[in-house]
Length: 306
Image (cartoon, rainbow, N blue to C red):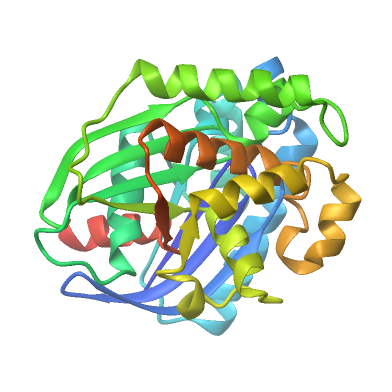
C-alpha cells in the first residue's frame, strides 16, 4: 500500500491506494484547501500563513496515514506551480522536511503534464489504442497532454490557472464583463502559443477541481462520489450557458448553490470554467469527459515502475 500527496496551488490532496500491475485500487482520498499559491503570481513568494496552512494539512494527513494505515510502505509527496514560481521555495520544502519528515519532489511543468496524463487515464476505461487529450486546470498552471495508454505524444504546461487568473483579471465580485473579456483573450492567446494536433476521434478528458466540481453540480451531488463523477460528460454549449449565469453571481451566491463542493473554491470557480471553455473552443471540442485521477495517481504508477 502507498500514499501520495499532491501539494497544489489551491489544494492539498491525499490518495491512499494499492497498486498492482498498473491498476490502482483506491482505499481513501482526502482534500484540504489551504491555497498555498495565494498572491504568488504577484509577489513570487509563498506567504508565511499559506505555508502554515499547508503544513497543518500535511500533519493531518500524516496522522491519518500513521494511525489508520500503518501498512503504508511509501509516502510520495509532490509539489507544483505555486512552489515552482516562488523564490522562497527552498524554505518551504525544508519546512516540510523538518516538520513532517516528507521529502517533496518539485515537479516541472512537463513532469506535471506527464503525471496528470497517467493519473487521468488510470480511473477511466479506454481502448489501448484510443487517443486521449487531457486538460488539467490547476490553481497556478494548466497542463495539456496528448497520447494514449501506450504513451505521450505531446505535452505542455501553461502559466495560467484558476487562482493565478482570478488574481490577475477577475478583480471584482462579481467580475465586470470587461475583466472576463480580458481573461478570455489571454486564455486564447496562451493556448495559441503552443498548439496541439489531436486526431478527430480523440477523447478529451478534464481533471482537477474545476471539472469535477462542475460535474458534481451537474449530477446534483452533495459530496464527491468518484464512481459517479468518472466518465461524466460536460457539454460545451451547456458550459457556456452556465458561465453566463455564474458570472452574475457573487462568491456567496455561488457557495449557496453548492456549499460543500464549492467551499474554498467559490472565488476561483468561474475562472476555471473560463479556461475550460477556452480550451474547448480553441480545439472545437463539443464535449469533455471527467476524470478524478490526477498527479497523485500518476505518481503512484511511476513509483511502481521504479
